[in-house]
Image 1 (cartoon, rainbow, N blue to C red):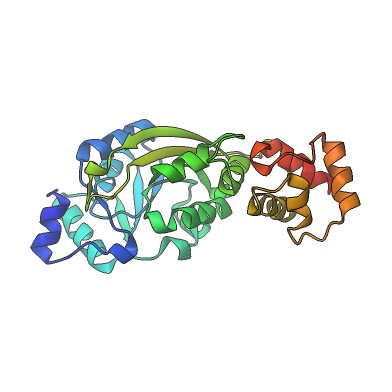
Image 2 (cartoon, rainbow, N blue to C red):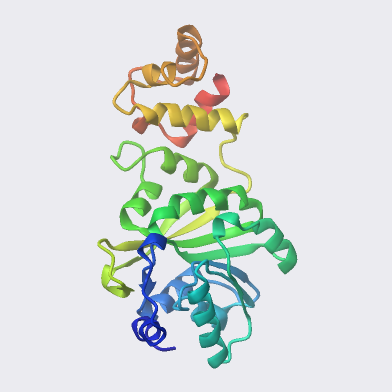
Length: 277
């Protein structure tokens, strides 16, 4: 496959900043991601943001079938032509927005749980992650490229500056770990920051079960919504509908000092508190 810059210029196509397009240009990086993901020959992979095939080709060489999602119609057409020229026949290009995809339906049509691989547009990466969480029952694992800062937030531990609502959300549902770092120079156009690929293994079941997951996430949102406040004051001011006595009693039963701040609590702490409120 020709370099992305040459492919785009030949067709008079410019990367669209509004779609966060940064095409992976280094084939070695794509191949390394696929190797590190340890995919199996019988796997069906959902690829998010297929672009010009830097991941699609090594994926197709490794797994049974690739469902390549690409929302840009011109790029999808260009990718299809390149795959045809390369004789690749186990890729289905889905020209659509991943946030509108019914991933459960894709898994059912494939008669398999999916593994997800993707170079995510920076501006919707958190939304894509939340979308995958919704469909976690049909997703075995995901290997996703994020802006380095976002990846650090996802993997952050309690007590660190990066630890926040998104950290708790993903770590409640999954084990998350670093796969490889990718320099900005590996993309066209070159982004301003480096990227990080992370592995996400969804927990079935979760390690610490919240009795009411909606309440659990409301508590997490309220706690991190006012990071500078103590946990107790953040919860009282978070429109949760709980009075001082109830919040104080729950914190005491959970063994959590009311003067602590949200970023010091583990996922287990938040679950325990949620189950007591």
